[in-house]
Image 1: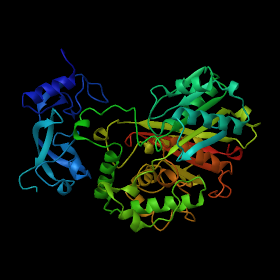
Image 2 (image 1 turned 30 degrees about the vertical axis):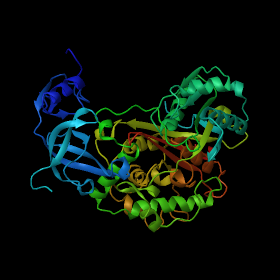
Image 3 (image 1 turned 90 degrees about the vertical axis):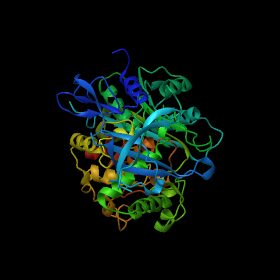
Image 4 (image 1 turned 45 degrees about the vertical axis):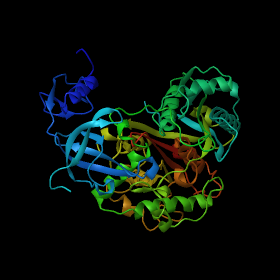
Length: 125
Length: 380
């Protein structure tokens, strides 16, 4: 390992790939990235292309004033692979984001750093 | 070997709760320690164990010991957020019982209100900070939204929690917010982070609190009634809300079960139940996780004034973090009220004949949970 798992994740994002780690033996995925599976300590981790499919697990709207940028969505997305991530849902009113909504991943810059954000899956809105 | 009843709180104090400009957090914490020692009838020079956590000091117990001018044989500044102080009570009990120390002080101090608002030495959360969460409120808003989704309630039960807390505060001369409050006022308060409005959120006050613990043999001779630590247990899991295994069940389920087991008492035996309440959903989660009602039923359980004055369960009798005091970290005040009730020293809101009190601390973003159970000599 020439670098830590977070740097590996971000390097893949920079190459346009959203990848998650899983334990080869159990198939269980994890996020944030690690050098061993959380809880078990299993060392058999492999990077796998994420499906990019997810579901809104919970959502809130920070009621910023207009001069601060207006309402901001913050959501927890449950990936189809299992792990959850904090992110936001774009291309929809922040207030219209609902728990259970199907969403798709997109890599883009957020606050000067690449991240995975989500948009409503086709037919979900 | 159980820690049950091996140690006791023999002195406690609060200082500067509410709006107290002109004091630093260190000065306030130090003053609370001096007042608690006076309450215990113990001299400063006897203190050899120091426990503290704050939101503004990197090494709070060292800052406090320097300020007091003492040389502890053992100290801890372990920080599990607002539950730190219940964890410190467990630490202190272990250190006292092991004979490492003889007199422990646990303290907290904050000038959060007069100092210009919420501050924290906490680092930004990796993979979260980019999305601009305003923690802790964002995390608790996400938990509240999930609770409403899973258990099918609207915002009314949360408003009822705030109103019950206020009714207790109306009885407590030390409480910060004492004017009458209605469910409609809570529901129509300015939305901060959906579904949490301003009155679903804890106060922003100044305040310090401290307590003194000694072994049971010495506690018998204390000037004020000693209140014994009968049970204490902690569990934590995640640091970031996105890593929470569940947004509606907390580690209080585990910490509570183990604390009750150590104490030899159950949830229904408690005369008062003091629960960390940074946001209105939180006492509901803890009533469920500690066994007062089933998971998902807490929103109905707290209805019809069940946890308000005159209700069947005396919850947050000081008015809680929602209406009494919340200077950034509230755990020390939760424990203070539990112990005051058990020693019959809560004028205004005293529960007549209270002998057993539960004090449950929460820290981080529903991350760390520590349950403590306190009782009078006759509960030993």
